Image 1 (cartoon, rainbow, N blue to C red):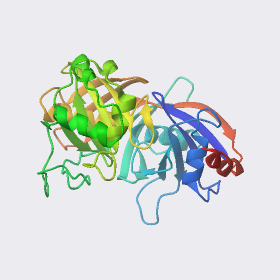
Image 2 (image 1 turned 135 degrees about the vertical axis):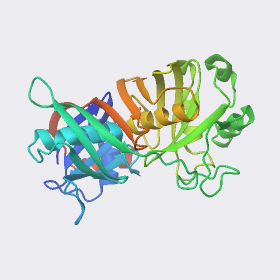
Image 3 (image 1 turned 30 degrees about the horizontal axis):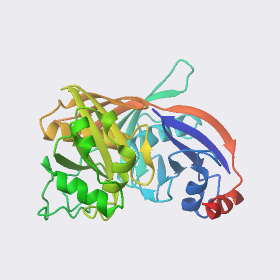
Length: 316
């Protein structure tokens, strides 16, 4: 199986041209190749192929997280898909239209000094704010109700940790100065946003898994802690559903942009600092859609023996 390793500000995936390669069990392959110690290493597998019949798009993408679960969308990943199809001559259109689990999205792209795509702006679409549409079972949020700056009490933190069988000490809440509210936003995949004064002091390796699998979210959820440096500048850390702590999350940054506006904490245009780098986000008032701009980076090409997928999975 020929593959390409790429990343968007550190959010790295293994990309495969599904028109040229046959993958019978992409979930198993994703689990195997994502292993950072015994395989290629990455946040998951992205298959790049032709769009579905009758769909007005230039290409399609399917995303499998490191645990094999399939995601609807990945903002950093779709920028790299754009680079993949343009740099390989599979598509020259600008903007490029990519079919995703969120629908067809448009990407504007620019070439770098080497003549290859290095910067992409994604039309992420309009946010989904209905708790029910996200599959959330948030108490008292019925039908099309939104969950914006809803109370998330100390007792709720403790219950989440206890339910996950984790250390329920809460001293970090004070150290990180975590606000006791949460906002839900979907960008095709669900996100929960918490605000604090110091994202570095949140024990994300513990908290992330507890909230991802909280009873409120039967389909699981992406978890973000955000510090508002100023109205136009934010800093965030992410626990990604199915992958754990990641250096960046494009749909998450989009959700944070929306949450900041809804809660009155930030402007509609923001620079967001993630551990892997920076993204520029705009939630346009004119059409209600979110635009995300950031880099797409090629790391290397290689080949993978797919028979290793079952061997590695069996040892885990």
